[in-house]
Length: 369
Ligand code: NAD
Image (cartoon, protein in one colour):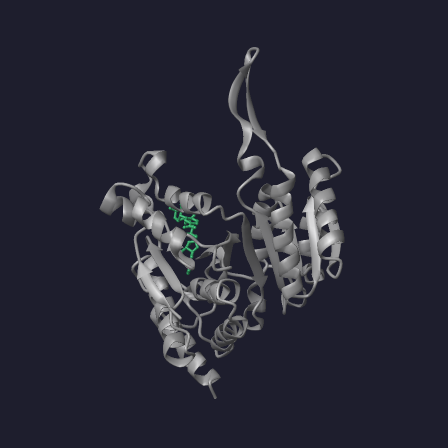
């Protein structure tokens, strides 16, 4: 059988630096776990604009559609700020998400014990935290029509439209229930059914999918504003949360930051299954291209490494190997390795991007016993 294919798009700024460390991990799995990937690499964002005058070449888009998974670093940077909106680096990423129809955005919020002091919340509130937020990514108020700024009488009016079809709610609800089954079997759906018709429909559809297809999963509903309060009060009450595009945007950022640095946060965006049964998938760290530290060996590669762990789990059915990689990261942190972003006010000297990657590889070696 041929190896699974992985398309790597390092992008701009610290993207190539953190991706170089993920390359070491991929090589390790090929050499030690009989888990080899056919890896190809291409350009996205500003790097693609420099080479082709477009932030995503059609050939690259076609490769992404065919790959078993896409792993992206980050795009953007001050050099490209004055470009026309249509060719800005971020458009490359948006095109990937749109044309691959990646409707479920998975954002884990997991607190490693060694970093519990780093949270803005009390240690006992966040230590051991492990929740997953699934945000609907391709519909809702960011896409609904009509939209725009219009003249109404003698003043202007800004309009955006929250719009969800039943099938759009059904498919992301199923993503939520499937995820809950793989974890603690608990799903909380969040909307504003008290004031929005789209929320009423959202609640009805999620409940119906739960009753008919996932009666074994414990389902609850919460208004999104109450959800925000509960996430900061006692986040460990949640396992999986499913919510719409707008509320998910806010709630996933809130939940993720409970756990500390931007340099630690992975994400996955999944679409419908392909012919081989794997979902269309794009994995990327939550952070951007960090131009302030690019090229200095200061970037924390863990967010990108943990994004690859998500690929192992959700694209390649290698949950045990994903856990092995997450535990290797945990060990490295417990052993005191810290890139600059994880040191705060502490007076210790940080490790470099490459030293952090090497430490994770060493911890993987140690995991073999
Ligand atoms: P950013 O995430 O790049 O950086 C915010 C802050 O966090 C910076 O101080 C940076 O040094 C730090 N940081 C981020 N990742 C880090 C890491 N791995 N290790 C250590 N420190 C890290 O956000 P920004 O500064 O608002 O944006 C910079 C550029 O990135 C902009 O062009 C923006 O459009 C783009 N951007 C891209 C993405 C993406 O590719 N998905 C996401 C957000 C921003």
